[in-house]
Length: 376
Ligand SMILES: [Zn+2]
Image (cartoon, rainbow, N blue to C red; front, side, top):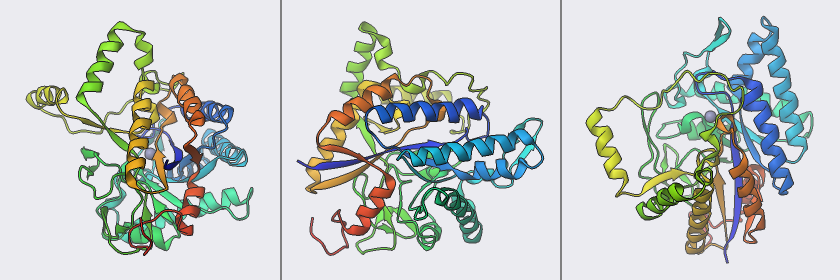
């Protein structure tokens, strides 16, 4: 049986436009998620968004409440790390030159790090990484940022971004997710990727493509899976005739006191006709679902685990890493995540590990990556 090394990540941040009450959507939700995972003996991996924190520190010199938020952020991140959870790097470029006006953040930076020059991207990532390493080295001298998830998943294609990451000592990136397609505030197209499930060496100018050679950095996709029309129809019927709460995702309810959500930025407005067509097509075509716990009902989390075990088994590898996503900022109902944590900790072939552990295993050659010269 293939051993599954599951990493439970959480992109820990304010909303993309800088809105939201930090205490409610970050501090409280982090404490709750941590409690749930700790009860199941699970160490989570928090991808903390650092551009936001650097903006709070900068503006905190003039607005004391922003300084207080930044201080609590640091305390909570350190405390979480000391409890055995991992903390790694997440960067949202739109916080570049953020302004704080009339009690709200005004973010005018480009959302996609792909649109920044090599110099600008390198400076941005280096500043964030240096800050996070300095913070956590107060607790552990040997702490290192080893992994990266790009804001809004923007990693490919880029003539320089992967090289920048590897120059900065990042071991692997986890921004590729099969099936994503954005055409709005960011543009990206991950509908066709060479390796949707296993870690691989990427072509250094396009992380969607697998290189036949060893490269200075590894890509580990964030998991996504096909939700086929038949199980979807079955879930729809069951939702109607059983307890509908069973089919509610954690983010169906916003966190308490989360503050108004002012933005909806992801997609360009579609015509009425294309919306109708998309709805019809949905009934016949499998839908690709990102394995983001905040957006999955418990039955869908179970389908996700089935998919992982099936693909792990057919890989022919003895062990495979799998990265799962979450966004605590959106979670008002933790019950499905609690059930998921119980389930995962009871499955013998699934071991939850952290991003740092995954980096060590990649470096130790635990997984037979193509190009390593080792056999599958
Ligand atoms: Zn993010």
